Length: 151
Image (cartoon, rainbow, N blue to C red; front, side, top):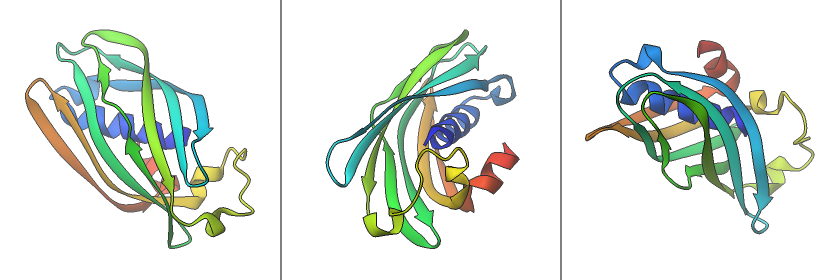
């Protein structure tokens, strides 16, 4: 889940700002994972973003479908807008709400495995804005492994 949030933040931030090459995600740390019910969970991540630009960036919305071996097993959505202040280099909290769609497909998965996310594919969209300009970023289905290697 940590890599999901890192991906969400990096894509949203870089596309939303005209000087995206200057913006970088320097660190991401697992904050909190909490099951709300048998099918709902929340995930909080602390992401250190260096934004040297003069514009604040807001990750406003996002829906990501998560696949395991061609089965749609979960959906993640941005739980609350995340604001990255201008000219800052600090940690920001990213809240993701998740819904498990296929619990049986996840049985037997070791969720403490550091390579866990490399088994999953993702597709969906993200929305971010810088000032009044907004951008919807469509994410075509790709494996996390390939996606992370391309960042």
